[in-house]
Length: 215
Image (tube, rainbow, N blue to C red; front, side, top):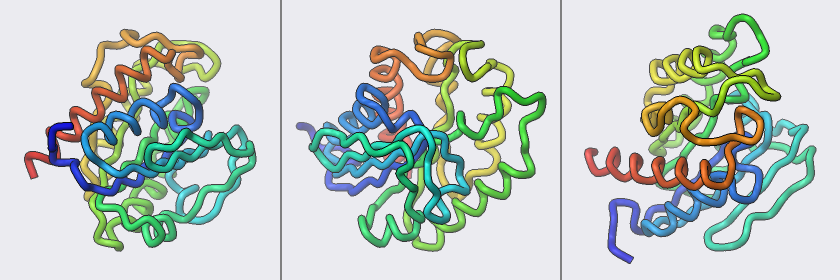
């Protein structure tokens, strides 16, 4: 394994449903970061938004955890999040990666709730910053329009632009720049096939490496 900027880093990755099933980012991105030399701990809770990681908040649709090279553990549907400051204290990461956006987008609503999202997002990033831990926020990818969650390209662009402007001091990885609209197939408009998650995970890991090398 060739040394990279990630070699020896401890990474804590938290987020929503994209981190809760086999062949999702908890497999593909987690593995890609390990292959670049990082020590990775991933914990995902389905349906969560930024505010749910400020205190223990039970999920409703599944959760999973993966530590280092172990296989991921599928957890109970009502598994609760853990406060981000507690996770950082426990794991002592060099970098926190937040994979979040789709569950906050309100695709089934006429208007994206910016005021609510701003409060939750900025409170979470301030909590992370208070620990003097570097942070990277990975925004939502295009997916495909329609499906169970009524996702649209217009709304996901709006959410991504919002996150780009509001996640500082976290760095932002704009997943929309990593593919073309509809390029990666999905199962329900929002969640990708195994091939899509493999491509998304590899692209995030590559972009993260580039961004960290610039620092």
